[in-house]
Image 1: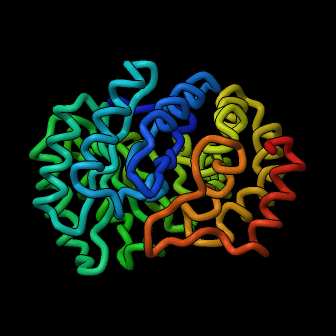
Image 2: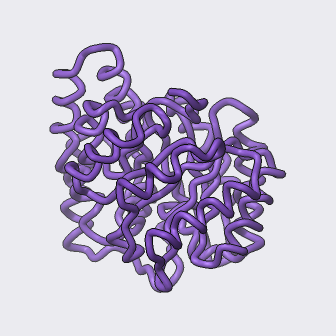
Length: 295
């Protein structure tokens, strides 16, 4: 990489333990310690899986501040600081930098969306306003806007823009992006079912939902690939596929919050409009988790 890579391997897009009274910081702290002890390479805080969209602004800030303090430099902390309001994204990004976050994960704008020119202007404004590396987060199934390969190429020369969490699901587009950006941007899979394919295109790892429940195994899949055991990494990718599919049988993070609750890490509590997992889907997820010895 021509720029410093935030992490190489697997980062957990961490759930935020919630109760009706608010954020359960005791549970969050234990979860951070367990993830690090299991060998995870980085943690993403208050992103999609962390229900950042329904945290209050004060909660969002405090979850980031607390996580940085609890991690205490053991792994990089990547703060989810995106918004469809660019000024809010800048304010939260600056706070995250001041709180000691190692990097920022900035999602594309949602609902109001943007043109490709708008994406370039937004990301440039945020990157100009901070002193930490930014990972661009592309998830068009949720936001309704897609970052095109040429747009990545236009942003790749900014010194603070260092990576991509790519969850567009389109391998052909990802290959085109890799061709255009070269070593200027680290590419991380944003889909757990595409980790090894993206690694094969020179990807740097995954920002994972699966690793909430299987941190050592998810990090191990990347490690196998980097050590040259491509067949071993591919086998794990296929072995974990039924669990990955079950974790996305309803809108993320509904299934993974149910899974983490069953493992004893937090309450199965989400904020509206998210609701607990439907029983038919849960029974399938539960059976697969039992098969892996997770519960």
